Image (cartoon, rainbow, N blue to C red; front, side):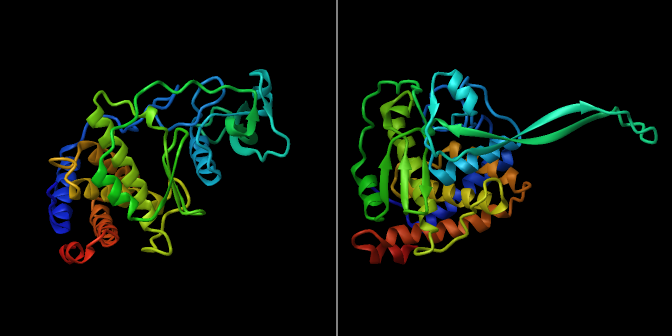
Length: 302
């Protein structure tokens, strides 16, 4: 399989993504794998209703920190009504509920209709913390076709890989990558399923390059923070660069551009952010190439 140099990857991918963003990439950002009962990365309750507002960020952050592979949460009472039991000693997760009430309007404020609301904290538990609840069955699909060269490239990075559950993430605490069960990848062709799998695993490997004992980037621990958004930009560029470096796509895929445009919006549409992210992604790609057998020639190109 022919490869272009790391410099060519950087230039071609970055130019393509910037052009796509400036042109206005269409379509929703979606995960390339199927999440049972879910259409996006949104926490839900035991009845399947998505949480709203600040609770989305709260539960995503807590799920990431605590390694929950499923985003179903419910109160102790709701789990009991669903026939499940929260295990003794499990630590609750915080959500906020706003209760509305009325008071006499302020006569000096014409915009005051007397409506008020007060925030109250509630405790919810993840499905991983309960017994007696059966998750939806994983759809039956054949194993993803393997790509020997790409898998060898990843293997030489020396990053532990765990497969299972519904989420993809890098966990700094044990320096490991978790990938969803292969059966959740639901593209219409086997070739696309393979590309989706590799695109996701190299995104998470991108995060891993930022670990303190590697390139020591600020990984942005708080979901929704500028640092977190910036790291997502870097990781997705690393995925795009790596896929192109390995010759896995004729041109950078539009889903990379859609994903990156989404995070640029989180950074207040600062398009300059992509250039900073591109430089860090270039550094990460060079690090990854340097881990490969016979790396001297490859790293010279970087």
